[in-house]
Image (cartoon, rainbow, N blue to C red; front, top):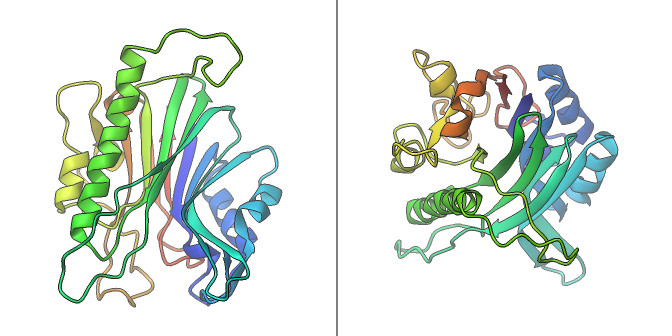
Length: 285
């Protein structure tokens, strides 16, 4: 099973061109993926570089035949001119059956930093996918860039979402076959958490998420499982230094300890320039 995660920067390449098909083709060149998780997907933001005024989730649906596409808007707002609706967020697309989808708003606490901090709301899209080895909860997110207090609060909430899922799997709600909204849902301890976390491997948020607690509820960095002797490959500022002088790693794939033995390989495409981030590929055996 192959999974790709990618901050696609509203599909704007380093050449300033928005080309959704180009990004999809680059992902397909990496692997015949079963699930793809994307961050920074836009709807109707004409002032973004390259003019992201179109409905990108709808275009993706046409470019990914056979896939179910689920878009979660972290930002959903009226345009400054008061005419149109604008949305910005994360997306999960799967060619395997998706049993349940949830969109989680992440904490957005005020930051007391002097002069204020540039920020936006953040969220996590969670899709429970029927895989060959049972249901797996795919969570994809994009955490705060400018505010460390916000980012830590969001990382803590991601861990809480995962633990809540594990608790429901251990003690499921009452079985309900009514066909109503109360009908039984799939619950699973198996989780894959992907995204642009905007922290580095030495950050406290990384230590929080990648801290085995001795239980099946622990999350682990898939890179450290598959390539423990190799430093993380850079995923940001590799070809574009507008946000800093040196390349860094801030995109990760965390897996629940229940899936650790299935991690077969993980790679980063270091060549592509069709986004300002590099895509990651995880393969599970």
